[in-house]
Each structure stands twice: as structure tokens, then as C-alpha cells.
Amino acid sequence: MVVDPPKADPKGFMAAGTIASGGPELSPTEDRGATAGSCCLSRRRVRRCLRANLLVLLTVAAVVAGVALGLGVSGTSGQMRPDHLVIFAFPGELLLRLLKMIILPLVVCSLVSGAASLDPSALGRLGAWVLLFFLVTTLLASSIGVGLALVLQPGSAFTTPATLNTTATLNTSAAQSAGQTPNKEVVDSFLDLVRNIFPSNLVSAAFSSYATAYEDRPFNHTIVKVPVGKEVDGMNILGLVVFAIVFGVALRKLGPEGELLIQFFSSFNDAAMVLVSWIMWYAPVGILFLVASKIMEIEDVGQLFTNLGKYVLCCLVGHVIHGLLVLPLIYFLFTRKNPYRFLWGIVTPLATAFGTSSSSATLPLMMKYVEEKNGVAKHISRFILPIGATVNMDGAALFQCVAAVFIAQLNRKPLDLVKIITILITATASSVGAAGIPAGGILTLAIILEAVNLPVNDISLILAMDWLVDRSCTVINVEGDAFGAGLLQNYVDRMKLQSSEPQLIQTKSEVPLDPLPPVPEEGNPLLKSYHNTENDAATCEKESVM
Image (cartoon, rainbow, N blue to C red; front, side, top):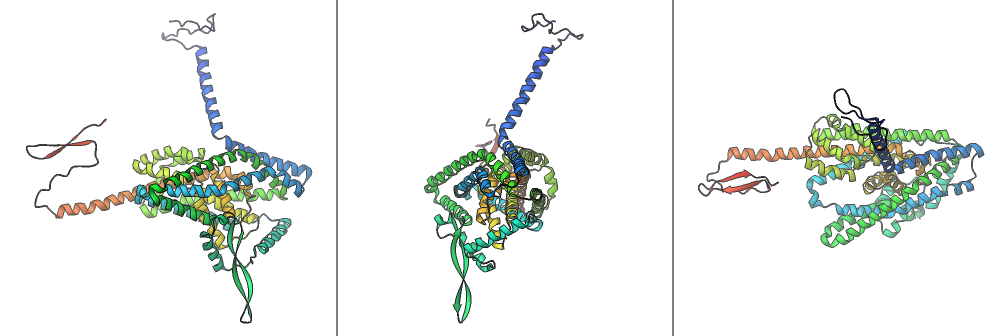
């Protein structure tokens, strides 16, 4: 059988011939059409991938362009004058001002709506244990990040005589303006921490915090250093975070009367997230000028890149410690099972998390593998994993703490014990509040820097390396979610065993004297009970409800 020639080929040169077996032979035209269709499909996939990752690609391109621009200007005209540098960095300054502007509504509204949405009756005891597990692991990750940054000191090698003199002058003037002395008492520092947790004025907490200064007063013919409290510039993030969480819980306690206010804060939070997404589309422009101005400002650019490499290495080492040691150890202590066998069962979702850098995109695959490979029940995985994708941010909290200590070391700002505790608490709470928000890690880092009065301008350095660290953060986040599901499955199995053992003992030891009346079965729509009037015995028969 010979196929009619196509209309586009009137001479029939491209017609199909008859092969020896008698079947029709595909023409080159059909092969070309199939190839063109596959090419169109691949082009669509590429376009879809580019659209999905357009912001990331623009950010990386802005970092590269900023480095090239900064090195080019520094190489041709030398170091730029400070007044010209301020004008050059103006687009980057706008980005930082926008990020600072969104901090207050984002922190308050997200934490209020998040705390109010947690219904204890709906979550139950299991949900409370899971939330506690996520909170503890996030706090442990933050502690690992701070500890590694203090030990490895990725930003301490960045020293030049000019920067040392300038930083020392700035620190001295700042301490004098705040009325503080370098040797602040430890007790007063802890008292300041507690005072800031409970601010006396919520409006003033948006732009100032409490700090202890000292005055010399005569007492019994001696001079006594008396602590005197005063308000200093800097947002009291810690007090706002605690108030927002407690206020959200109080709204939930009101029941139906508080639903209107909960919806208000939820809508306010959604609007703030829309603003954040708009700001992040401007971020590549601001990052370009921030990175370029920072490179032109620094004399030893090679040392800067060395410190940035140490910062990335510190984050990766922290993620390895938390993902391969801390989380498996917690799982082993509570389950007495091999945690690395559990990890081997979710290798594919972890690889997907590294490739996509998205916890939400990995969620369906993670559900499939924890159920099929690790034996987690469906109702547990479908309850825990979505909560973990929203709440659990171990990897992000770790990198934010490393970044905060790194920026403090770059600027020669000492971190006492109270500031370290503030970093840990703020990173743990703010990471949960900023979960699911575009560039939520950078916003949380800005919140942490505001909490401990560190310069937010150096966040451009973290933005330059954020795309490298973000993928390992996602891997740690989804790994913690999976371990949480495994721990909950083990807890449920233990509860079943403990509840079944007394029933078996009672059945063997006690024999009822009189036959008990039949109890109707509840909660099973697949079974219908039919009673026989002759012998008064209930029989159950399966009936499909499909």
C-alpha cells in the first residue's frame, strides 16, 4: 500500500514507500514533523524553567555584573571618592530601605496570623509534639551556626589598617553616644534582655530598645557605678516577636469573637507578602549597585572573596553536621533505629530538593518515599510534611546565624552572650514567621541584624552568596520534615503497643459471667450490621459504598 503524497509535495518525492514486510514506511516528512514536535516541546520546557527561575537567574547575573563593574571601575580610576560612592550606591540603598520598611508589618502580621492559626484542639497532642520537635531542631541549627562562626571566624581575617582605625573610631563614638561602657555587667545585660522581651511601649519598640548605661554617684564617701536605663535607637525585634506570638494565641482563645481580627492580620500578612514579591523584582538592580559599591569601597578585594569563601564553607559544614549528625542522633535516641537507613530511603527527594531549591516542589515526592520506603502511614505523612514545609526552617536558621556573626566580624563588632542569645531567639522565631515568603531568608537576616544593631548594608555580601547556600538549606529543611514524620510514626506505634497490652491481659484474666449485649460498631462506613430475629446475633457484611 502506497500512501498518497502530501499536499505540500505535489511531485510525490517524499511519499512513503512499501517496505519488504508489507508495512508502510515512514516518510522523512513525518520524521521531520516528529522531530519538530519534540523540539517545540523541549523549547516549552526550557521557557517554563526560565520563567520559574527568572528571579534567581537575574540575581546571579546582577551579582556577576556587580563584581565586574566594581573591579572595572576600581581598576581604571582607582578608589572612588566617598561622596561619589554614596551617589553610586543609591539604588542599592533604596533596596535596603525597602527591606527595612517591610520588616515591622511582616514580623507582626505573620507571627500573629501564624500563632492564631494553630488550633490546639485540631492539632492534638501529636501536633504539639511535632511543633516542639521543629522548634528544638531549629534552635539547635541556630546554635550550630553561631558556634561554627565563632570558632572558624570567617570574617575575622578581613583587616586593613585603614578599616581597623575607622571601625574603632565608629565603635567608640557609638558607645559614647549610647552612654554605654565597654565593660557592661553580665547581670545588666541579661536584665536588658528580659526588659526588651516585655516592652513598655509597643509603638516605641518599633524604633527603639532598652539599654543600660552607667552613672557615677557618690555613696558613703565613695563613687558607685549605678545602672541607669535609657532608650537607644534600634528596633526592639525581640519584644515585637514575643508580643505577636502571645497576641495570636490570645486571639485563638477568643474563639468566634476573634475570627474577624485573625482574618485582618491574615489579609495584612498576604498583602505584605505581595509587597515583598514586588520588592524582590527590584532586588537585582539594587544588588548590582550594592555589590559594585562594596567592591570599590574595599582595598583588598582578594581578601574579601577569601572571607566569603570561608562563610560559604562554614554554612556548608554546619549543614553537614546538622543533617548527618544532629538529626540522625535525635532520631536514634527516640526510636533506637538506624537513622542512615531512613536517610537512604529519601535520597531521591533530597536530590530533588537540592535541584529545585524548593520545599513545596519536593513535598509530593517526599510523601511518596517516606510512605513506601520508610513505612510511614499516609495520614501521618500528609499531616506532618505540609506543616514541616511551612514551619521547619533548620537550614535557613543556620545560615542566617552564620551570616549575622560573619557581618559582626567584618565590622569588628563584638558579640557578648546576650547578643548571641538574641540572635538565636530571633533567628528561630523569625525563620518560622518568614517561611514561604520570597527571599524570606534575607528578610530574616535583616531582622536579626536590626535586633543586635549590626549594619544592614553588608547584607549585599550575603546576597551575593545566597544562591550557593540556598540549595543546601532546602535539603536540610526537607530532611528535618522527614525525620519528624518518622519520629511521629514511631510514637504512634508505641502508643498502640501500650494500649493493646492491658486489653490482652484483661481478656485472659477476666471472664464475664453474663454475656454482654452487642455493641454497635462505629466509625466504619464499609460495614453494615444486620440483626437476625431468630437467634438475636449480629452479623456484619461488607458492602461497597462506591
